[in-house]
Image (cartoon, rainbow, N blue to C red; front, side, top):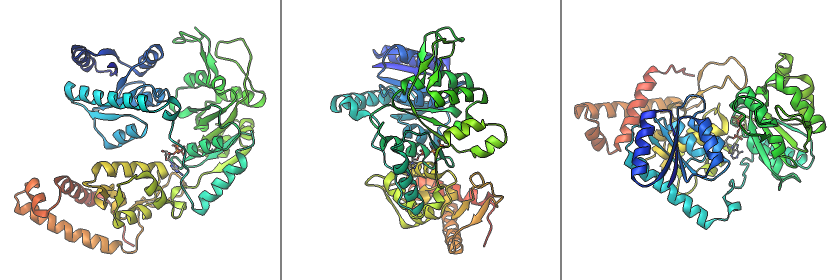
Amino acid sequence: MNLLLVDDDAVFRDAFVRWMQFKGHHVTAVSSGAEAISQCEKRDFDIAVFDLNMPGMSGLELLQRVQASGKMEVIILTGEGTIESAVLAIQMGAFGYLTKPCSMGELEERCQAACQQRQACLKNKPARARRRPPLTLVGESPAMRDVVRLIHRIAPTDKPVLIQGASGTGKEVVARAVQQHSKLCDQPFVTINCAALPELLVESELFGHQKGSFTGATTEKPGLFEIADGGTLFIDEIGELPLALQPKLLRVLEDGSMRRIGGHTERNVRVRIIVATNRDLAAEVQAGNFREDLYYRINVLSVHMPPLCQRSGDIDRLVDYFLASPWQVDPAARKALNRYDWPGNVRQLSNVLQRATVLADNDTITLDDLPNEIASGVKEVSQIDTGDRKPAFAVCDHDSNDTVALDDISKAHVLEVLAKENGNKASAARKLGIHRRKLYRLLERYQSNESTPQMTS
Ligand SMILES: Nc1ncnc2c1ncn2[C@@H]1O[C@H](COP(=O)(O)OP(=O)(O)OP(=O)(O)O)[C@@H](O)[C@H]1O
């Protein structure tokens, strides 16, 4: 295998290089995301192993940067082993993740498995078919029907589109839908997230640079406007675009002209712009953080994404969409999913379901596999989306008293059995007829409920 390791831990790097070379693999080991990107520009790798926590660029950011090339499989290493980051890595397209400390043998095995998958993929599928899966905008609630109607109205024009809405509501999905229903659907769809990059990098990503125009600009590089020429550029988190850069964007929007950083040549591009933000851009204009002329230039056609809690019926549809066969959700868990407020919207729902599939004992997701704040029938009211001063917790279900009573009975029984077994969890789980992991989760839930403030109706 041709392997790339990116880890700031020199001892681990050294051990990895020795082991993998001993096993006959080619290894390139670097200590930062920036070095990794430059290596990827120079040569192809079969498998890349990224440490999650690195100064500068994290493993997940790096994954996002190299993912577009679709050339190699990525394995993420995490020292903390949080389920959330692992789920995120898989969602972003990583082959898998491993928790440190792990043995070199284990890591090599995982790399071999990733390599086999890559080879099977390269053999069986033509290059075009390996691109992104087809886009699906799930939702038939009245609010989402309005969004879909709007997409069909605005897609055929070549005007800029502004998509606003809270984080995770599906703004990027809508941007892609607009592009796919437009006459530019066969042309490039290029994306940039302004929040994920430092100021100088945003400018150089958008407009490109000439060799030597700043430290680190070792080669000339075309910007995304040039790459997207003839197609669509999706600028995510436009509210984070530095003020100093805004006139440059305004200019390219007005007459299609731009210059690379350090360049003297005026270039002309024809790009349809779609921008998205979770900020209130009008308020940002008022606050002096966003230029008024740019705001009017991008706010020609706008789409407002409704929060998930305002899309009646869509939670069940999304659950069925995210969970492929043979996964099922038992009625109590489905009820809990439906009554939760989803401050993180569709992204949070997708993460919760992926987490549940990791935790579930079999193919059915139960209340035990859901996070406490969802399973316990107490919903966290989002203050981010509405700005309203609401209590942090509120009971949202009429029969929550029954749930609490049942919970109390089962808790008493579980604790009694555990006491009888002298605190031995393995034998208590056997007596209770449940998996040991389930017992651990129940005990965690009892503990956190004791420390969670709850209001009764
Ligand atoms: N209607 C939908 N149907 C299917 N999947 C959806 C839908 N809405 C969102 N998703 C999925 O939810 C996740 C978040 O969506 P997306 O990135 O488009 O949200 P966003 O509003 O752009 O978030 P952010 O503001 O944080 O960038 C993605 O995995 C996306 O595929």
